[in-house]
Length: 538
Image (cartoon, rainbow, N blue to C red; front, side, top):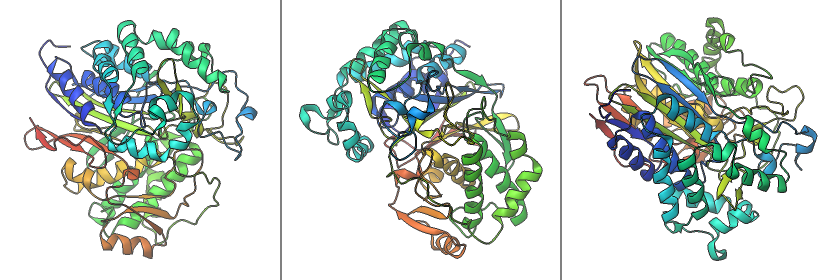
């Protein structure tokens, strides 16, 4: 790396995380260091959406335009018997210790810092540790999820101690005290992630999980390693969009975008997702979601046929399906648990040296498994809830398997040069949220305009193995113009109205290179708590 300072741009869903990233830039860090500082801070201020007991997948682009993916997603216990994971509803439990897989977030951070960072990982973690020690204000988004998930949190001793101080649920703006988490973060900053994967912090987490019924062991932690992978890509509106493959749903975003590029050529215009072309976009997203549910899982068990999905013949057929006239037929409901909120955060950064980062990390559902280790203060995710118990499923639960992952970072190249970093929360809907963004940008909007524009989501909004909404259901924010509403109704979709700027349709974070003068343009979703400034940065 060069020795001079790398100024840069950042977008995150929380102002404290954005500030931490800017401070990392000021202290001489590059885009990777800034992303890690924001990521660490988010595990303190946004425990509903991410935790060091969760997973992460990141994409890094370097000044020469090269892009790689760090997939830190963890595996199920090597010793498990799937028969022991059948919940009362016949599915893998959505919360509790049995929903926890090996947390891979810390390994992702370490790989990013070691491979591309200018500063140490400890430098990124220390401000988050200090914030946890001092206590942080409960953000509006955190409070909404505390209210929604209070019953599950109240069942766990560790979660109850943190989120119900004195027996009362934390309120909006109150101080959330996290001394145990502060101690863990400090130890990780001083002695590295081995304290988790090979040391006392991880041993404490495993002890808590096993006491509550998990099969995870310290051997499972010790054997965990992130993988560095090549991205998948496709072309849309003359730009190359790249996302993660493997057990990530990124491939299915690219599948839909490839078809929409064909649709745009056929129509002679970019399809408008909240205009008269809404049903075209919805039909394509319905089909890609169905393919995702059918095909996505651990590649070691059943590899996604990426080449086939992105082939000319397949995308032509998908475009023809989109240009049809009716919504897909409804399928039978397979699960009826209520909506869990929260799930994921996105951090996007870029610097003047030409480094770009899209980092996505999560607790999966809000507060993950709702299990918090009282000794370390670490909240555990519930990524294992994505596994299926169906024997023929691509994501069938088995020993040592990675679950199908909603996390999908996105970078954009134009003529070989990186021009964009995109990320969003949204669970199963992440490919759809990214599609809205890509279409809005192609329609000429700035990142700020594109992230704030009303959105809709078609089909299941849950990120677990199954969920209530039918493929023909569209959950739509208020503010979508009448032409789109009429078009979707006429096409046979069933509309379910959401609030204006409803956080269930995702929190987009965007950094783009402005074509006119090479300045950075930023879009931070107003549905999140990260809006500090929008517009251009030089």
